[in-house]
Length: 551
Image (cartoon, rainbow, N blue to C red):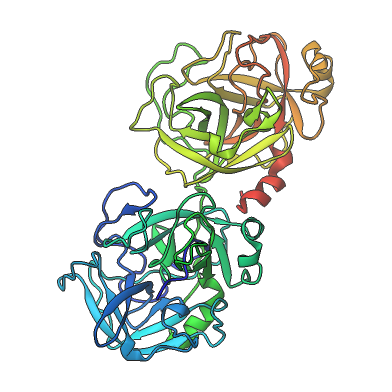
């Protein structure tokens, strides 16, 4: 049976870490240390809840789909994986399941368990595309061990833009079935993006029970992956958020998936009641206290005993939320500006940071990437530095930009999120500006620098010659901006653009402002006077709307 296929999606946020079976769900026991990349082979035991579904008759047996173990008695999959041409359930003897399987060519009984099927429960509303979900009850219970375990369920809130992991034995980029289990990490996309890509395919199918995900310009998942789960990690556990359902077919009549297409997934949360009613499982909700942003935002993990003689110097790890944004230029790249980590997936900066100054157009997201955990732009420390591609961005024209990364940032001692300032800055507040910029009128600094500014009274600021004469970026002070600097001291200058202005409260640092990018990074700026700063407080509702995160 050709699977209907691929792409990811899910729902997320509130999850149930302690709902069902024993042992504890969603925690692999054999974990290999490796990076998640497209089409990467897995290690045996990495995904112990993944099941293989076979069709058979008297002369042959064929792996057709994946499934996910949710308890010792039940596997959840796509309905089309166990349906015949009449959309009714196949005869039980035609279906076989195997768990603990890693290599299709090597059936090792020391790890895998084979089961006939006792019962197939297809959703009563299955029509071929809609309600594409089914439960399989094996002939006798699955035995849990290091290589066979259940996944967790109950992802309760929308996670459009999040990344999930799909595993399977599907068709690879070489158009061949993979004999070993593979994994891919792909993003959930919003409904409008999916519809714009193929309205004929998705127009009648996207609903509360279906989610769209994947990439529209490169391969994701394909035939053979159908019925498998899309999982998300929360609370250090893996939760089932969606099931691979269908995607566009190739125009060559081969019935294979179009590998450069979004795909539709069954949204598991929509069917939690149906699953519970048909399995007798009690699936309790659990709110993950850290769905993406650390509750310890704005806290340093590293302090230093070294004596810093220049108050503008910083030490590595002092500002772990600082990010560097780059532009790809052929086989090379250039530093554009700074930014601030506010969430595992989001970097906040200014809109003119990502703008091509030759034509006032914003750079395409795939031309941008971000580095975090770095201190010196010229000497990269591979032990602390992490690099992420930009998936998309949101902008408030000539104001701020929110970069969404393709994969979630890993928090370390050198990489942490800043808190967002949820109160207005007031005259006299002292803030710290951080970036690879000048504090004395010289060009970019390779070392991360800092300088202190004071919030200036609006009337005093308006009398500043520097503020009055700059009009290119609409410098009129309003609720979106505040004025900062020292009238008779060094101020923020070239290279600090896009970086944050941080205010300390107790033992935490809060992002209160963003420095606009200079028109020309290589032109020395005036080192005495005041400067307007984008006021983060004003944009909090917009940031929350775009990230769907409560800060």
